[in-house]
Amino acid sequence: MSEKIHPTAVVHPLARIGVDVEIGPYCVIGADVTIGDRTKIGPQVVVEGLTRIGAENLIVGQASIGGPPQDLSYRGEPTEVEIGDRNTIREFVTINRGTVKGGGVTRVGSDNMLMACCHVAHDCELRDRIILANGVLLAGHVLVEENANISGGAAAHHFVTIGAFAYIGGMTRMVQDVPPFMILEGHPSRVRGVNVIGLQRGGVAEGEIEALREAFKRVWRSGDPRSKTLESLHTEFAGSAHVMRLVRELEHTDVGQKGRYRESLRAEFMRMGQERLLSGAETR
Image 1: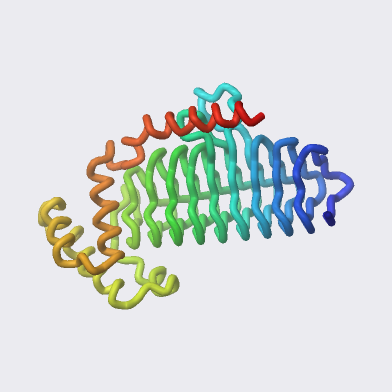
Image 2: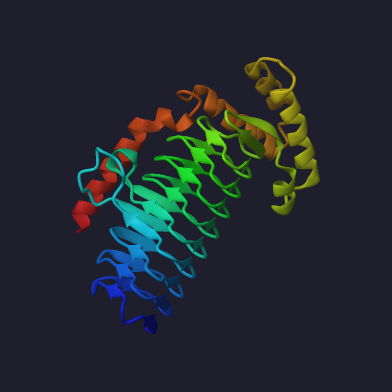
């Protein structure tokens, strides 16, 4: 095993450090931390708790990962943080571990960019190829789907879902689920149009983009009842995977509490957290 650990770094002897990992000046790495191959960390980064970090990540400048959740119900349970591969996590980013009531784990996928001063709270799930610009704040239990792009200073209420390929304007307040493929902006926020540029960059076919444009007009511009509109989209656009995903997530939002589908899953999250905690206790 080869590694480059600066002499001022404090790395617990039980930490699991992969091949060609670099740990810079004044970092602190806890006993239950796993760091994957070719990951670079530091300076002054703290990684603590039950935290697993994958390969080829870059984590810089006073980031804090795996700290206890900022939740009054937390009682020191061995909840976790899981981070995938090839992420860039910039200065002063904070990622807190999960809570039992939220499923027990905070997850960050792969190929994401978290810019300076972002906060990812307990039990959040970030999928892949996401951009969080400077100062984005995610409250607990937020789901961010793949290819979402969230501009600086935007903030998401707990249990919000931010859909795939969504583009969020700067300083936007998200208190309800954000539909996939759409541009959301404002305070209060509203859907402004289809995220055409993001979809094109993501390689989505032009026919699918045109179908989403038509769906946008019907849902947000026609004035017809949403239930009626979604029913017609089911019939007319059954061959469009993207429109069907949009319809499905809008239906989830409508059955959720206060426009947040994940609010309706609280009991399921608690069950998952309790099972995870019990499983962890049995294997320790």
